[in-house]
Length: 147
Image (cartoon, rainbow, N blue to C red; front, side):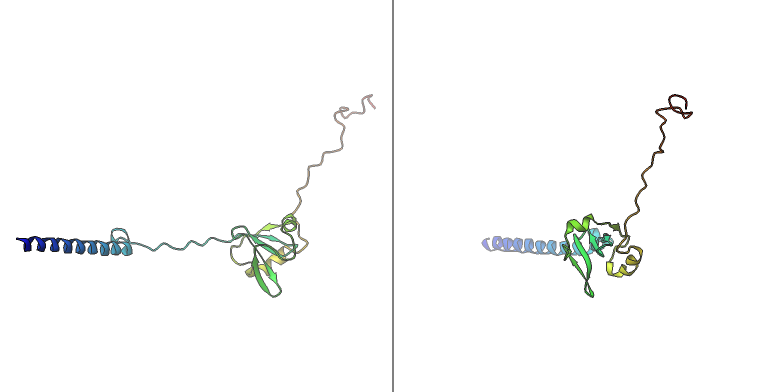
């Protein structure tokens, strides 16, 4: 009788291990094939578009997403957290324009420089000028004394 009990216990342990291994493998299959074997696509990498502001006076671009300044350094383009040779405060106080492209400034710089030369400034809004009239003082037919 002892042999049967030991044999049953060994069989139970083997069964448990077998079912555990089967469950682990089944879990792997479900994971790789996706939920319930349906059409499963691996998550794609989300690439965020760059957004640039251009400072024509310095020929420098700034990406607020990357927190980097892009500009030419000799014959090559560089991207750095701060522009070399100028203060960030001076740069940000200079005229700027938001760019409509979302890739490398090097791809667009030739056209950008033509559209926004170094001396470019945004158009100033014209203040509304009041006519030099003294309507408060008279009714338009002369001065207070009727002259």
